[in-house]
Image (cartoon, rainbow, N blue to C red; front, top):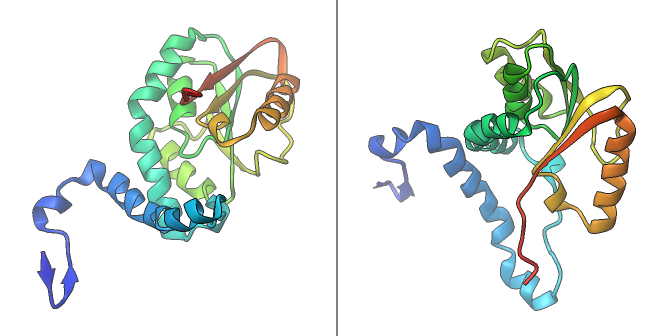
Length: 197
């Protein structure tokens, strides 16, 4: 709908509430995709800003979109893992906490810690509160590239993290995860697998 030279969503499109965050996230992606022509011409990325530089609105819509998308995947990942007796979980780059929430629901004795950037913490806390799991799932601010993962975890989760990194960076990340685990602990990796060809 165009009014006074400005496009607006119709009432019908606003009713797409569950998909609204995803739509807004796609709008925000334009900032990056609009540099594609220059990337092709130069042979390298021209927009290198990461989530740390997002506006508060963009962070909120990104986390909301990831949370909406993760709902079914998180429950399925927890189910397929077969892990039911874990006590301590570290969710590296856990965003909204969708996966920690799903694992906490699947493992009644589990206490999970989400490690993510400071701007994400209050958003994740909101999702955790809505799930009624404030006593079992908490969020710690930190950059997964440099933060201490701690020790004594029965379970470490990397969900949609590895595809962003090089092979060498992933090797280093997985070694850090292994050091954070108790002997016999579990590393669960949920990832987008890309065909090299």
